[in-house]
Amino acid sequence: MKLIQRVAWYSGGFIVGIIVLMFFLSGKKTSCDYGPNARTLKNIRSKEIKISEEVRQMLSDHDLDSTAILEVFLKGDVLFSESNTSMDSCKVYVVKGLSKGKELKVFVSNCNKDAKVSEVIITGQD
Image (cartoon, rainbow, N blue to C red):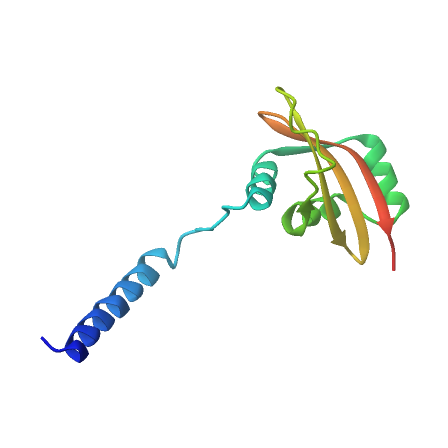
């Protein structure tokens, strides 16, 4: 078999395989959360998020609500250098992100069954 025929057979099989994968994976909620930042945020979002009353009041003072925290957990970055991940029970993570033009730094305790937001710092505003 000539080289051009081998390339043609390989390309044909590769294209058919890609089409089959696209067909099977098109309706499913598949994701590629392999990095530590993405895995941590996905783990936090998968739990019940509890927000303290002080944080709710502080958010309302700045014309924000709990959806701002959820947006930070969706698009934010985990600051591992400022987080305390050596604890056994509830690891404390610092997540930084933007919501409605304001930069938020969210302190969250990631426990086994829930995630508790203990503090939010607004570090920048428009």
